Image (cartoon, rainbow, N blue to C red; front, side, top):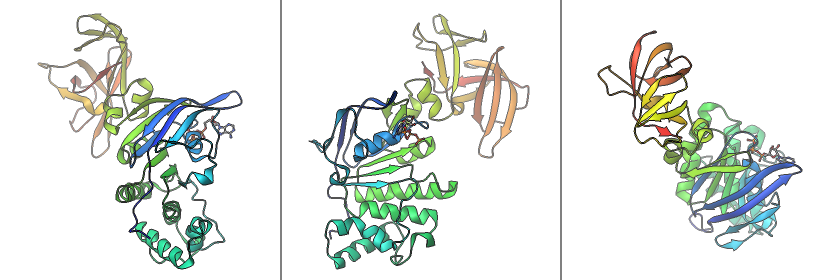
Length: 346
Ligand code: ATP
């Protein structure tokens, strides 16, 4: 076997995919182009269609319409087993009555690779997932994290065209999730696979991905790099789903003047007349002094000490409260002057 490196990995183009289950439109007008070697994440709340899209790419689900091509070749009519895809499931899906060697070797046996070569390849992929020498164990003798690494080894040993991972870390505890996601990213970079990764965890998506597609109700709302999605969300849903955000509702009442619903005037540049919401992240609210410049003034009404930051709720006007995260020490009922370092008008 070659020095283990993906040799067949490919780009993916998805055009106008639609899929309904009865009345429910699970996927609507999905268009995506994923580059060769890219780590691409589908992110969205439960039921938004992430798994259905992944299963459609894998060939486990047939779309009602639309096309899918791998490396420029239309594969929509190919059954799952001919698509040469490595799939990693949330629940590991290892065969309990087979050894780790037999589990990983399964796909190679189907491809009629000689036994000696299979052993060599299994050893190699077990080294890649940092589990050397466990060939003769059974899945139940391994922890959840180890079982998932075996599942990853099983998916990559066939040298697939791409690796599809469906919430692979959701069954693991928080610390393990963080360390295993780093390992998955490191393996992907080293071997060069195109990866499509499904998660509903925004922090995981931001850390691991080259690009992210944020989905809701069967549609893709925005595609971009982690930075683009976080800093420049297209709408309220994306802004809210990907991290914490303040949404100050109101209307433009004059040049550079936004009147918040609570009756407070916020002076802000580059306002369109149609602006109805100012979105600002908690860490982009800087505490300044009365002599300014500042965007809004309010009263500290709640505070939570979280170690690395302090979280404050600041009441502005009658109705609005904004969340601020800072290292500054403030006291309850302090009057504070806040400047928005970065904001978005929606
Ligand atoms: P989760 O994170 O909870 O897995 P998801 O974003 O992956 O959610 P999907 O599993 O793709 O969402 O489901 C999208 C919608 O399609 C949901 O409303 C789900 O109930 C529905 N659905 C999925 N598979 C089927 C099916 N085989 N039959 C009927 N409805 C289905």
